[in-house]
Amino acid sequence: MIDAVIKVGGALLKSASDLQSAIAAIENAAPGRTLLVVPGGGPFANAVRTVGQLHTLGDDDAHWMAILGMEQFAVLLASRLRDAELVHRPGEIARAHSRGTIPVLAPYRWLREADPLPHSWDVTSDSIAAWVAAQVGARRLVLIKAVAHDTPTIVDRYFDRARSPTIECSFVTPGMLNGSWLPA
Image 1: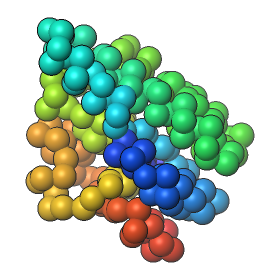
Image 2 (image 1 turned 90 degrees about the vertical axis):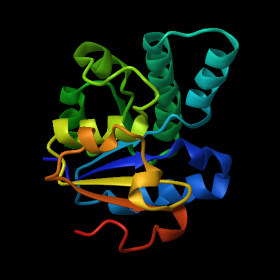
Image 3 (image 1 turned 180 degrees about the vertical axis):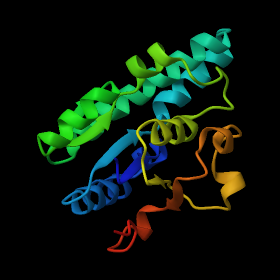
């Protein structure tokens, strides 16, 4: 069982200090816990939106390109987190834990094989993180976002359908990442 899936919002890439706060908080929370880090899409997914506006992209192409954007952020996170390991499929998560590393999901291969979600901008990395949390049997889903708002306005339109009601969900900003942001 995974204690927590932690989705790191891509908007944190706009601030070196916000991203570093998230990285430090994850590293501090990792000992004694089984975590899985899921990246947002951030500027990588926004590039897909921009290309889609200039050159007609179908929903399928935009969907997979945005998920590849999440892969790019996953590589960055895995390189910055101490004792982290890039993983691509469910079986690799348990192996990373057995080696004492923090798994960071590069989701393209897993999602391409399962293809579980609609292909539209109604589905973002938030819904992907919620779906992943349900698939790995996580107890908790934490979304680290650049700005906190009410739940209906902070996530995409598909999020509530992707999220399992049995998984505790919380939203935090980099400023909230203190000792109590991830309860035991």
